[in-house]
Length: 90
Image 1 (cartoon, rainbow, N blue to C red):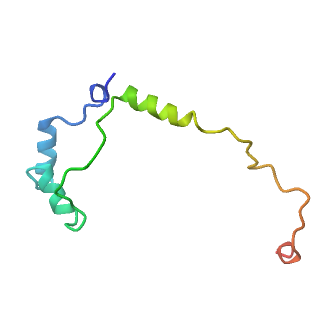
Image 2: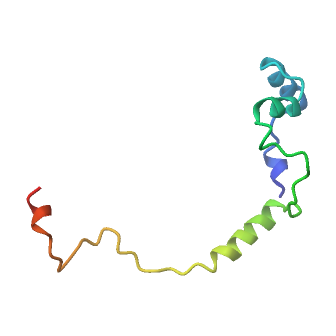
Image 3: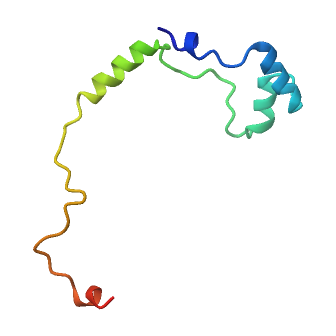
């Protein structure tokens, strides 16, 4: 039921190999060398606790249920309109 169980990502060995290929020893070193110092923060982010995939889907569904289904007029064409002569000539 959890996201990590189905989407494990690279192993530690794979991660170290990828980092070595591009010349780094750690992800922190990679980030420090690529992210400009003026936008890099040293303080922890104030984030809500992580959710399981099921909890996230339930939350998204609750949000989506608040949407209202409206009539779409896309592709219905324009009727009873006056087209200016300057547009008609082109």
